[in-house]
Image (cartoon, rainbow, N blue to C red; front, side, top):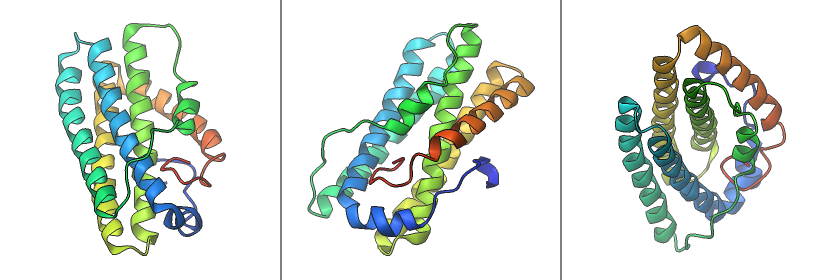
Length: 196
């Protein structure tokens, strides 16, 4: 499916039947997704401090993700809502099950980077569907802009992985991730969360 290579697209009906009826829930979940993305980047810094380029790129990503968190929070407040409690991201928890256990340190790093790429790719796809189908003009513009940002994050993670291990090795593992995600995502697309 396009440059992201996702195998299954989100049905636009999700926007009309779920997202538009639960905007406050979608925005709260989105804010927490941004916070979790920042936390994941910090985790990569903590676990792989010897990888100078990873540390540099993840430091920048943390700042960007927290800026996105702030922007979503500002939108929540402007609309008269309050940030709800963090909720579990079952989609991400399902992806975590596919992380390789053991193996080389480089292999573990690549898998963590590909996990990040997978989450960013699906978020990008969801933001595109939202931007193209939501009736709210402000949200359409907002999600279009963030879609482009998520696409950049996806590319960043893939590129960093290819700097760690040979491109063929990374691309083969990425194909496995795409196949796995296609089996996971069929269980989602019905909830009032970004990945739900």
